[in-house]
Length: 83
Image (tube, rainbow, N blue to C red; front, side, top):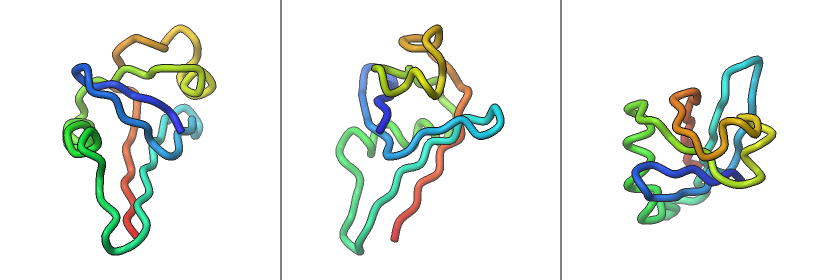
């Protein structure tokens, strides 16, 4: 899990990885009643529109690198999978 922030609202995505220079963020929801948290309901629509995100915490370092932590970036691709 990796913590991201958009306009002061934080979320944790389930999977984050750098695939050949493309940062891919994956959120997985399982079950017919699985829904977003209140913060996810705010942040994910903005991310789909490509708003800059701010990577936070040690788990984000392997994905973005230490120089990008705490800095806004639009370098990401968001995937949301519901099962």
